[in-house]
Each structure stands twice: as structure tokens, then as C-alpha cells.
Length: 263
Length: 259
Image 1 (cartoon, rainbow over the protein chains, first blue to last red):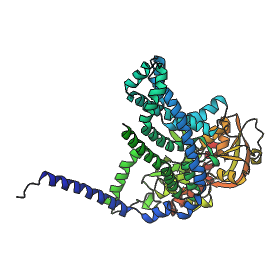
Image 2 (image 1 turned 135 degrees about the vertical axis):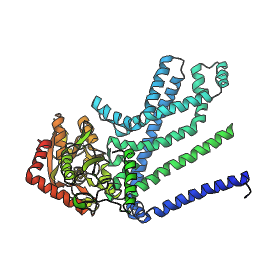
Image 3 (image 1 turned 180 degrees about the vertical axis):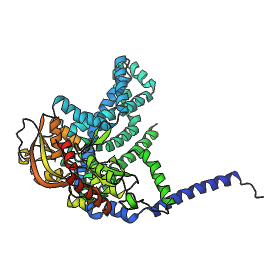
Image 4 (image 1 turned 30 degrees about the vertical axis):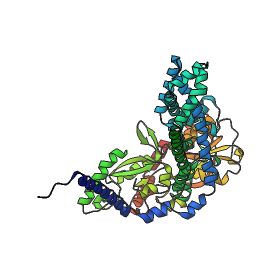
């Protein structure tokens, strides 16, 4: 009769088995995939080089531009919404809650279509593409950012407001000069997260119809996919998204470390 | 056709294939000889909606000129047609055939040399020309009149190629699908839209504030696409088309959709 395994030994065996299954799964997938065909579809160097420099000078630049426009508008609106939601005036609160629940609950895709085609139909004015993107991305982003900012404001110790009030500041003054700046420091990491999400959502601009000079990364990649009948442009576009988002992720980690040190 | 309902079917097909000694595709049709289909018993058709009057959703069903023609093929094969809506790029680049999404593509698709490299085409079944849709009251007569103004086209279509080749000085705006393109013309976001005549004439019929200002005879023909090398199916389609043109059913279907 074999000696029963000690608890530690059993834990090690179980973990070893888990690693084994993982390695086997990866190996099986690696062996099963047709690498030659994948390679010719995704890594066609001549197609990849043909994409440059336009994919950077036009597509990458536009992606950044659309994102920043949307983020800027969304942040401003988000701050207003957060303050409204914290207001002591009930109708402000209701308005903010309704807005946030609505725009957080519907897909960004529908907002783009509703705004991009609804506004021109309703008022017979064709909005500039940049403006439409700014509004659509901003409206959606604001709903999320309002909640983030509200959490940040709540996280600022109550003593800060009380101290400001005792110095003779009005409630509004204390909020703007003392509480909100501290709140922003707290919510910088989640706001950067939102910026990364908006970077990817900016690809929805394709729904509005784009001229060549307005193409962003995703649309550029898919257009080139049709032109070259190769999947390589999609891979290149994906890598360029990483060029934008990876430094942002790094930035979040730096900010978090700094906030932790400051405390 | 949703992914959810596809899974059990795939599983069943895989099990059946194993039992049958690992044949991956089952022959269908009379005497066990016939075109190979992705899924026995069904003719899977790839299309990109909406493309009235060729394919359009009405009362929860996809109907249209292409649908009626492919139904003739399905009837000949003793199977039923099932329509899969997929982005046009996937059809046009041959990817949908490569990953076995469907047996046949019927998407109001022009036969071009570039497309013929990634799929095989049936005989032509419709003569298409490119046309310009504008709002009523606009003076646009030809593509040159649009200099400095906006012309919309649909991604990956022959209209896109025509616009790029002839639209010197015209600001070209690309749309994902024809529905958005036509709405953009209607709302004045673009000054004109280029697409195949059949689609634009149908739209103008239903939207009297727009009209087709010009048609450019580009000598285009629509064809049904099949996976490269699927000659059995291609021949069957050609036989059915030839018979339909002879016995009057093609004319009947044409009248039904184009008046």
C-alpha cells in the first residue's frame, strides 16, 4: 500500500499537471495550425511595406485625433454630469442619472449611427466628420467618466471640504479649488483606461462614411485588406494600435506608483 | 443562421464524417453524384444585406432577384437555400469560401479578374452598369460635375473602382454598406452616390426626392461565386441559368423585381 501523499507534494503534483495540460494544449494548437498559409496571409512583407507611410501619417494620426477630440469633450461633459449627480438639487441628479444610464447602456455603434445620420436628417446640415466623432465618442465616454469622477470626488476626505469651508470658501469654490483637483489625481488611472477604450472605439467612425484623408487605423487596414486581398494590413493596423495603447498602459502604472508614494 | 445553431450541426456533421470513414464532405444530389456542399441538405448562400432588389429583408425573410435565382439552383439540387449575411469584404476576398462559410455567393457581385483569382464565377446572370444617385434639383449630370464636391461609394465595390478612376478632383467618401451610402445621399451628407444601377433605380423608386442622374455603361456582369475548384456546383448553376432563360422563368423573376 503506497504512502499517502503529503499535502505539499500533492499541491505540487496538481500544479505540475496544470502546467502540463497548458503546454500540451499550446503544442497541439501550434502543430495543428497551418503556419505556411497563416504566414502568407498575415505576414506578407511586400504588402506591409506598401502601407507605409500613409498608415502612420494619415491613419494613426486620425485615430489619435478622433480619440483626443472624443476624450476631451467626454471629460468636460463627464465632470459636469458628476457634479450634477452629486448636486443637492433633485432635477439635476435625475437628469444626470438618466443620461448616464442611457449612454452607458446602449452600444457606441448605435450612438454613431443615430448622431451621424440623425442630425443631418433632422436639421439638413452635414456636420464635419471630426465634430460628429467628437460628439459620439464624447457622449458615450462622458457616461463612464462621470461615474469615475464621481467616485473620485467621493474619495476625497470630507475634512478637506470642511477645512475649505472654515476658511470662508463657498461650497462651489471649495469643490472647484480643493476637491475636484484632488479627485482628478485619484481617478487618473481609470481615466487613462477610458482613453484606451476610446482609442479602440474611435474605429466606429467608419459608419459615418470616410474620405481617404479621414481614414483611421481600422478602416485603413480593412480597405487595404480589400485592395491587396491579404490579411497583413489588419495585423499591421493592430500593431499600430498597440503603439498607441501600450505607452498609455505604462503611463497608468507610473501614475499609480506615484500616487501610492504620495500617500 | 446563428453561430449557436451552427454548433450542434457542425458537431453532428463531424460525428457523421467520422462514422463514414473520415470523408469530410458528403456528396448530395441524385445517384450520389453531385456538387459538394458545406452542409448536406442545404445550399448556403453568402450575401451582404441590404442590396435591394437583389437581396433585401422583408417580413423577417431575405427575398430578392438573386434569392429567386439561387432558389432555382437549390431546387435542382433538391436542397433548401439558406442565406448568410456577412460583410461584403469577406465575400469579395474569397475568405468566406476559404473558411467554408458558404457554398455560393450571390451578392449582386460583378465578375472581375481580381475576384476571379480568389473564386470561380458562374455565367453572367445580370448586366449591370454604374449609376449616380443625386437629390432632385441638383444639376449633376456626369461625374465631372462633382469636382470639388462629395461623391460617396461603397467599400470594395466596382463603383468604388469607377469613382477612384474617374473622380479626379472629386472628394471621395467611403461607406461600409449601401444602406448608409443611400441615407447619406438622402440627407445631403454627400452630393452624389455611385453604385450599381439596379440598386439605385430601386431606391429612387421608393424615394422620389432622389433620382438617378446618370448611368455609365461599364460592361459589367453579375455572377454567382463558388469556391475555387468547385466545378460541379458551378456547372450545375450554369445549367440552371441556361434553362431558366430558355423556359421564361428568368424573365418572370426579372419582371417581378425590376418591373
